Image (cartoon, rainbow, N blue to C red; front, side, top):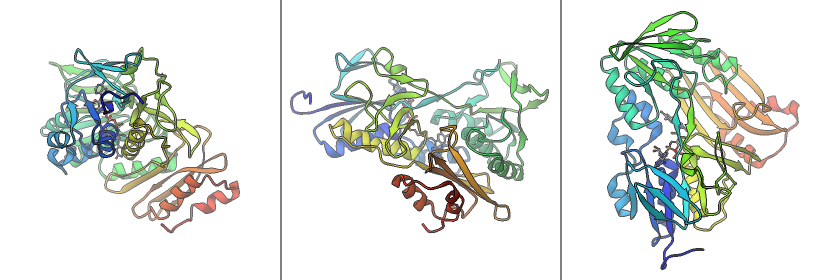
Length: 413
Ligand SMILES: Cc1cc2nc3c(=O)[nH]c(=O)nc-3n(C[C@H](O)[C@H](O)[C@H](O)COP(=O)(O)OP(=O)(O)OC[C@H]3O[C@@H](n4cnc5c(N)ncnc54)[C@H](O)[C@@H]3O)c2cc1C
C-alpha cells in the first residue's frame, strides 16, 4: 500500500450517486484519508431519478439536491465543481484537471454517460433538449411554461419520462419512435401494448415505426419536425431520449481497458490497471451472481457499486453481490418493476410470461441456462413475490423448463 505521510489519497471522478457514495464510505471508514471529488457539473449530488418529478413540478429543486457544500466540508471531501478531469496517468499515479495534478493511491472513475444527440439535421440546440442533467430539466421546464405541444423522441425510458412530463404539464403530447412499441429492446409486444394503452388513455399521440428526418427551423427555433412516414408535427418543445454514450475519454491513453459499452472491470470493480476502479452506469463489470459481464444503468446499482468500490479502494476484496432493481410509474394507469437482467442484456435469455387483462397485470420471468436471472412486473399491486425471486436469482438454483411457468405464481414476499 502506497502512503504519503500517514494518510491515503483518493481521487474520484464524477459526483453522481456512485462517486459521492464512494466518497462518503471512504470517509466513514478512514477518518484521516484525503478525498478529492470532481464533477464537470455546477451541482453537488442531486437525485437524478427525481428529475422527472421535478419536470412534472411535483418536487422542487431544493428537494432534489441530496448533498450540499456544507456536507462536503463537514466530511472533509475536497469537491471541485465545474471541473472536467482531462486524463489519468497511472505511471505517475496522478489525475490531471484544470492544469493541475492530483496524486492518488487509489482512484475511481464514476463518470456515467452523456445523452446521444438526435442525428437529423436541425436538431442542435434551441428548443430541442436531451434529458440527463439538472440543467436540462430547468431548461425544458422553462420551455413548457409556454409550449402548447411537445414531442418525445425515442422508445426509451427517458423518452417515456419526457412524454409523461409533457402530459402532466398539460401540453399536447406526441411520442415518436422507430420501434413497434415503447421499450421494445426490453419488452415483448404484450407488455408494449400495455404501455400503449396507458399512454393513449393519458391522451398521448403515439407514432410507431417512424423517425424524424428534419427539425425545421425558423429564426433558429424549431417549428416542426418532418418524419420518414411523411407526417409533419408542429410543437414548441422537443425532448430526445436516444440512449447514452459512456464518458470513458478520461481514461484515453491510460492503458485501462474500455469498450463502447464502458470501463471493463472485475467483480470487485477494479480495472486491469491496479488502483484504478470504476462504478455506476459506466462500469462494465463482472457479476458473480449472474456469472456474466454487463453494464447496469440504474440508481440502486450506482449506490451499491459506490459502497463496494470504496471497500476495495481501501484494499479490501469485496465482491458486488446484488440484484439491481427499479420501479416506475408508466403514465397514470401502469407501473413497471424490473429486477436483474432482461432480454435487452443477452439475446439468449428465455422468457415466460402471464397476463391478467382485467387487472392489467403482466409478469415475465427471464431464464438463462436454466437459472432465473431477472423479471419484470407491470400493473398496480403486482409486485408480490419479488423478494423470493430476487433471492432465487442470488441462490443460482437451476430449474427444469417445465417448472418455469409455475414460478410465475409465486406470491409471498
Ligand atoms: C431523467 C432520468 C431518470 C432516471 N430514472 C431512473 C429510475 O427511475 N430508476 C433508476 O434506477 N434509474 C433511473 N435513472 C438512471 C440513474 O439516474 C443512473 O443510473 C444513475 O444516476 C447513475 O449514477 P452514476 O453515479 O453512475 O453516474 P452519473 O449520475 O451520470 O454521474 C456522473 C457524473 O460525472 C460527471 N463527469 C463525466 N465526465 C467527467 C469528467 N471527465 N470530469 C468530471 N466530471 C465528469 C458527469 O457530468 C456526471 O455529473 C434515470 C436517469 C435519468 C437521466
